[in-house]
Amino acid sequence: MTRRGRNPDADFLAGDPDAIRTVEGWVRKASGPYGASLGPNFEDVVQDALVELTLDLRRKRFRGEGSFKGYVWRLANHACIDRLRRERSRTWIDVETLDLPASGSSPFSLVAEKDAVRDLLRIFNRLPESCRELFRGILEGKSYQEMSEEIGVAAGTLRVRVARCRQQAVTYRRSDGRHEV
Amino acid sequence: MKCSEISELLPWLVSERLTAEERRRVERHLKDCDRCRADLEATVVTLRAADAHIPGPALVAFVASGSWPEPDGPVFSDHLAHCAECRTEADRARASFRLLDSEPKHPWLVNSRWRSLALAASIAGLIAVSGWSWTWWVLSTERNSLRASLRNLEQRPESHPVAQDKDLPAGVPGGPGFPRIDLQVVELLPDDLVLRGSSIEAITAVDDASTRATVLLLLTNDVTDYEDHRVELRDSQDRVYWQVEGVHRQAGGGFSLLLPPGSLPADPVTILLSGKRQGRWTVMGTYRVRARSSLD
Image (cartoon, rainbow over all chains, first blue to last red; front, side, top):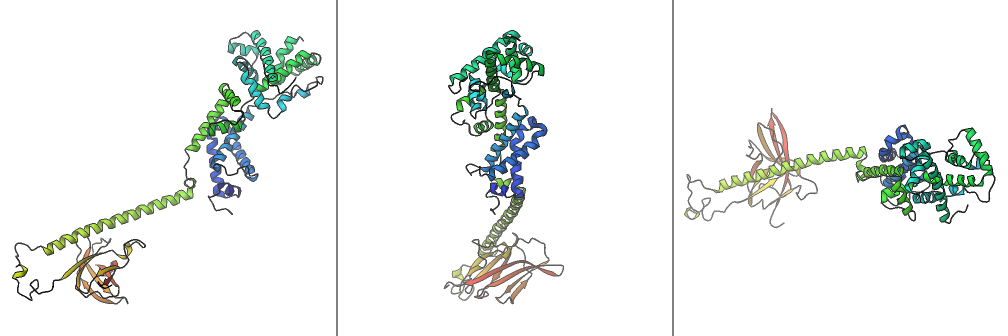
């Protein structure tokens, strides 16, 4: 049994009501700025964060470096951002389900590797802003016509631009030297 | 379908926005067209890149610490510059950590039980400080009042001129050869005002009470308007060996008691000051003194 108050992480894990109440208060306060965006999911996120914290403590992921409160704060922020991203996540076709002839190395392996996020970010960073704007519009489900009206560029020009941007992305990926098509 | 038409549909194939029929037509073309399959790959890469964001933990760590994890710092920093979604998340995280910075530094202040204890301790402290302040004021006032009284005793009023010592015949009080009365003034605090462990002693030592007359100034917090006052001296067996009624309160609120030499025994003496109201005596203060000779 820990001396109450000295080891808040141990008290929380031991189920001390004061510790649980205090930590939950921290999670709620840390998540406050995300409240408007999370809407009715706010309470779910708070509970998710508390569950995540419990699992982390059991796995001894909090090693006492830095304050426990700061750890809880960061975890609550992770949970909120994670939930917001899940809410707006887009579905992608599983290209393996396409009836296509097999090729030597899968050209789609890039998105399956663990370093994919960093590589994708690097690729996208290198694209010109016009390409980024165009593909963000596509991600949002806008048609060429809609984007044409927004951007002020003819739809036909946008179609050509899509093809060019695609090619540039592949070029940047190849120039990284990590993946061969 | 022509390659140009297929190429236009690829982004919507990848993001699953085509109808079943459109998807079948595109798949049929892709089976036989290497170039369009290459375009499909490029489309997948580009759309996934467009949908990639800074990992949540890295973004939060950046907001909390101000630095990116190595070696991804430049990539993440560039992305943050042009990604409105990541910037919005970073702004929210900053707002969250500003709340952390504004949190009280001592967690026990957050606990309601500790807040109640802190409030109770504050009130108790305030009462204690008020009591000590009152005592200090009583002490000061009594001290000043007694000094004024002593000065009056020492001063000879002009209407009653007194001969100089050398003019008095021998054997007359004040005259040559007559022993001078040695007087001391001692202020006494009641027991309930003596702080245990403080520099104020529980038993006040009175010097040379066998040879000196002693004025004891009894200080008290009891300001009740009594009909009469009484002072009792009790020995170590709690027996009253001397008492006087009709004692009057001084201007400052205390009571003075003149004890002739030798009236304080060697053992500690308890002095009780009582007030009379509606026929009943109420103890106003209890004091303890001990005579101490110069040989002690």
